[in-house]
Length: 298
Length: 317
Image: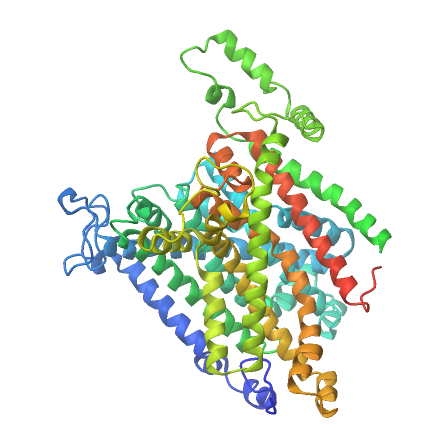
């Protein structure tokens, strides 16, 4: 235990000299987690974009004679209880997962940043009121609320994205507010106000650019959670309605066949796991790149 | 400290009102008519429909309905639409299962998570550390429902070691730990894994920090054995904050319990919630939501208080 213990990704001593001067893209490419995670995400994105030409079969084509076939050359990941090709469905499933994951996080970030900046900038009773509102949302177990809301209001893709996006805003609002509070006493904010910048200008031109790192990191870490939430809802039959291929729905399809057809549930879940790990890797890596000292900002 | 706790408890009241208004609004704005869902379509006449609506209080304006519902919730008279059972009783029947499962999951996640985190911190940037990091990354990336099915497939379907659903053998009743043990193994693992991942990560970084502190150096330079330095000085100080994260991870645990109890068909609150959602049993949904919110708030308060007990430097203002 004699060697110096390092607290982040980079050695402490080189923080100032190396990390500060290298351009951002070099630092990103120099981070193994970012590179590994981004590679997987890009591959998944490609699968989503080119699903039509990559998938060997129509994801919804039922061939009842080929039900529950194990992995073979014709069906590399086997076929499901309706004779649909699992590989093709996994490939098409990327669309729902990535689509819902990224779009809902965009909503989370817009709402969260808006509330966080407003609360942190205004302070006083505005801050108190907004944060109590956030606390209310934070104390409700989100997944249960989502089950209820989706069961009641139905689940077309747009609603689903909106619900998942809104459900995650409190965490984002809190993180952004904390950062705004730490920026407010800084001189450049005072300077901007002194020369007569309007509150809107201070928020957009002076605060927002400084919030970019924290927003990017927290957004990335949230994508994985959003993808898991969508898959969980689909598992309960409350996600994007069938026959659209969703990973959560496919895992649920395989429930009844665990003894005779392990592949039906296994592969879509594995795809889910890999994609979520990839987004979390990128998020962790970005956190190291932007601020090696700050931990736990999820 | 007593004052602090009282103040925090009082602060919960407006929050709970917020939670109840929000959940009530979501439910009351729902399309569809509970009276139609509940009535037997073959026997339903215009009169019985009107009577049903009146009985459920569906004709009053929103705020009145809210006030009536909340007062019957508080007095314990609120009844399930579906079974007519008092919601408090339904929850009372299910609560022990959920509490037991939650306690086991916390125990599992905390012990194993701390162990992994400590081992990692003692050998930072080694192979062991990397394995631990990968493990915790997988732990909070893995979907509960899929993890549960995979475990069932391996341990119940293939190896036939453990049962795949239920909490006790068919025909058995009561709380016989020996009978129930095989039934809770898989649910505990699934529910505890997320917690394990957070704890491992947290302990690793707080332990690394403690090992860099002056008091650790002092302990070493006094010539204490490495074991004593690590366990008595670094470990003790770095485990403190773990208390708080368990408090804050309670919502995660409750959300996880919904999925785990559903997959393993355990008769707990999560299962009750799912059944209620599918049946649009609004009184049950509402009560469970408020109940969980109370649990979350108490969890946070308990974490803050325990933290103060463990660390005398913390002052409550």
